[in-house]
Image (cartoon, rainbow, N blue to C red):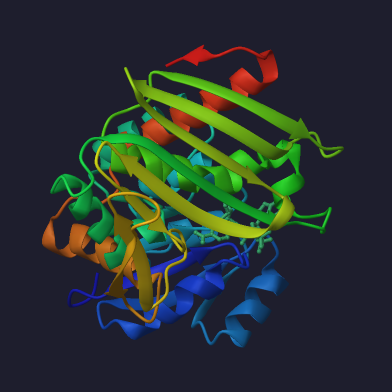
Length: 329
Ligand SMILES: NC(=O)c1ccc[n+]([C@@H]2O[C@H](COP(=O)([O-])OP(=O)(O)OC[C@H]3O[C@@H](n4cnc5c(N)ncnc54)[C@H](OP(=O)(O)O)[C@@H]3O)[C@@H](O)[C@H]2O)c1
């Protein structure tokens, strides 16, 4: 760390890096210093195209560099836990793309590595840091809609690229890991407890992964979450929170812009708008949250316990769909 500036390295040349690079350049607490690729030529050309000072021809080489403080892991899902642990053991802090892992045991191994090394690690759910999300959470906490009874939401888009990592079973592709993780994470946060039971139904495509998934989580006596996700429907994302005394509708829950509107009312035919201003750069929240944790000693907004519970819910949903029965958590 140089004068309280975090030196970041991108672990892979993934498409999603494009969302992180502008916020890393917008804040004086961050400096993007390196990119690593499995392919040295790709690392070089990526570094040149994005004006990144250092290119590493392997992930190991970047992790061995003393010039890096924080690693952003933007690998396919099946590689998240392994490289998060390698980075922690190399003395780096880690911001890892969602899902943090695809097995609960792997989240526990990440937590053990973080505890051993004293380094920070957080899952990159950017929407969690946006003022819109915090506003919805505050409305619920204030009792604005009474007791939460049902959280319902969707995240779908049409995926036609059959070579995409999202439809690669060996890389833990699938719509639940890719986009279902958002409504599940959202519902758990707004309900404020963890699910007790999961039931899911899925369409498994020729890829061998779930390409459509419809799921239910039961949280308590009369508290549920329901969601659908998939790669075979038009782009849709939305959430609705139903309380004992009202309803909140969030039309853009996961990729909120700088100017958002949510709707709240005593019933669905009495909704009133609330406008919310946010940052121009959606992904600024997650990098600044890392900086607060590393430089100021705060706890990351998304704890490892939170990530663990999200992974546990998805594992149970996928098991339920496979076995055709509800799964207790
Ligand atoms: N938070 C968000 O808004 C958001 C949005 C999109 C994606 N994501 C997450 O980010 C991750 C990456 O998604 P993406 O769509 O950006 O992926 P992508 O463009 O396919 O990139 C994945 C990168 O991983 C590296 N890699 C290492 N082993 C690989 C393998 N066996 N097959 C393919 N690539 C491999 C490659 O980089 P090198 O070859 O250069 O090493 C590749 O560029 C996923 O976990 C996804 O869930 C998050």
